[in-house]
Length: 537
Image (cartoon, rainbow, N blue to C red; front, side, top):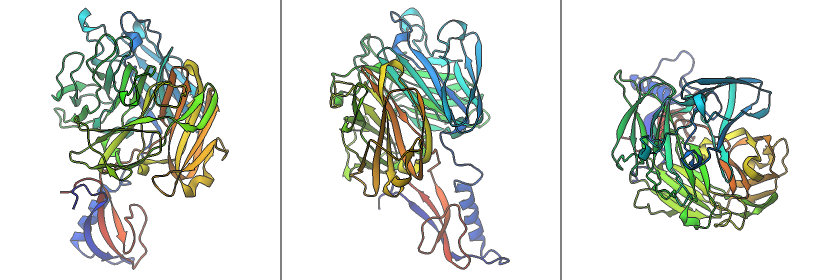
């Protein structure tokens, strides 16, 4: 028996549902019922997703912050609401705090003003290079961007400049976790100083984190040796991989972050972001690519799944959409536990020497594992592996099949010379008829997912513009949105549930599946069961 067999069950024994007034049968049933309550996702918690009222993000490192550059990068937030929202954005700068309030009409998305990048309000996670007596952007910063709303919203962050652009979906603070692993772009030929990076954000005082970089860092921290940092609310610790003057360096993929107990015994959740100051992208997809920065908020390890469906990015020629021409993506897969078996379309993958998995494809893929995994998808540049499409390197993290959403709103835009916008949706075939984008079921291209019968891929595209987009369906879907331009791109996950998949407990009626939320009909035999994708001991 595989020790990581998905959907393992701890069997609590068979029982029969009690009629009103009937006493509990045994103490064992009572104890198991308590176990079911405390492990059930609905026990004292709401279903968490990327919608929320409280978000944090940092102004991560960008090549244009470095000496000899012009600090021309800008950072904005996109805020989306389904009901009228009042949102306060508090930017903690080096010597001052900037507070701005935004009113968002119902069913719309707005863009904020640019985040401050100079003088007292400067929020950039940057310091002068070590050769000049600074930390080069590696270390602790009392700088942050805090987003607070009076109603649930969806938030995104976008850092862009001339021939450089990257964006990410943000997760609300109540969806954060206590363990993360970074997935980053390959750090190649940025034509100037640039670094693979990640940073940790705290939302509570006395937050202690253990960071284990996978490579030597800019400030000389050794690979594989953990160190601890104490952060207070709104503080950020950023790590940069070692790199040379032209941006050839080590990627931080595989670096780990976990919260540990502070002096009072408390273990506080944190957020982790990963990215690159600027890079040419994945060598597996050729080296004749353009260059881009990237940024993604990492998913907490407790929300990783065991099954992912992928879809390739479509191409474009300027603003002319080419939805049936597929770019080649590079995929990186990180396993939460050692000795996890990962399969691509049923074929066992062999891990890299660094322990993670790597492959490229211009076709839809099915990625499965017998333990929790996180998957990153990487776009190449305009001249590498993508059928001649406009675009540039970009990365995003994929949603596991059991963490899909049934509605999402996002912002498409034309900043930084973007000329084409897309959303690609993976949806059960039975839900395709109800799938709508901005109230319309008309798509540019729909086709069967070749690796998992019963799933469809739907593609909708537009000539680039700044507009709010809403996707709805009566079934859960996964989706990614992206923009393409000459030497430009952005991409991010449209929406994700952040359910704790570490364990699910419930009542299993005879002949039925695990029931975690609904009553069982009186008189029907049942058993208590705990299902987990992890090794159970």
